[in-house]
Length: 70
Image (cartoon, rainbow, N blue to C red):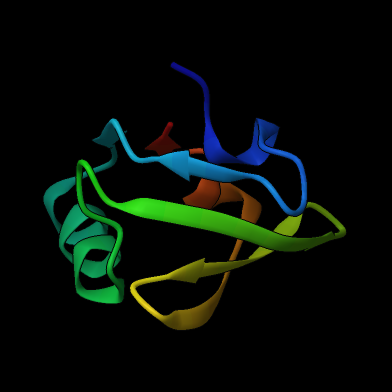
């Protein structure tokens, strides 16, 4: 298991665990980051990520991405 930030652009990964406090986890789940779901890193800019998750393109900060384990 590794944080989503370690995933290279163009790579698809399966979400193993979503960390953080209850509020952060709920926010990420609402965006589509759920355990067992697929996520593809589109690009990385200044540590922040743009990802495809559940047919949507989402930008997340490095701090948020570090809480998503793949």
